[in-house]
Length: 224
Image (cartoon, rainbow, N blue to C red; front, side):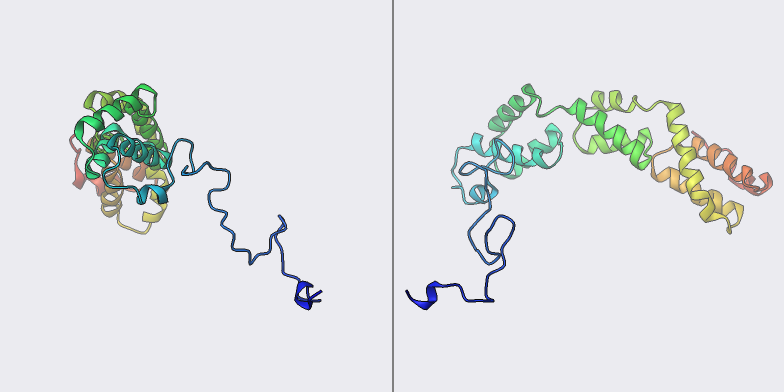
């Protein structure tokens, strides 16, 4: 028997828990998938899609693209339609595919909007005005936008504004009262809170923190 058929002492290759040597270059990508499948059921392998012929069936291309986009995060119908347009999918094919996705519940702008409002209000403290603007930018219909932002009632919006000011207040402690007022109102304005609500909430917080009311009069009562 040739000597090179025996493993040399002290040269045993390190092996992983499955018994394969770490140097083993056997391809493991896609284990457990069918041929051409992507990481999610019903999606194509991106590498296969990248090499697809440019004249492939447009409906199949549209479905694959939508599934890939939806596998990463929820999307509105308008966002998917724009993605298909950028890939030169014909409008009639795009509409047909998006209609079908809507029928099976893969696209639901009302559900998207409600989840968006809940997440962005509780997580970022955005007011109804800012939430509505974000949904419009994502192509959500106006009626759906209104229904979604109504999920945040005025009392909840005010509580959130007060919490935002409470968290930011200590960082302004060394500043003059008018400067504190301006900065804290700016925080609320950038998150979409009405000027009148912002003024009232900030002024009450500053007065409770010891600021003299006279120092805040220069701002006057802001209009809603």
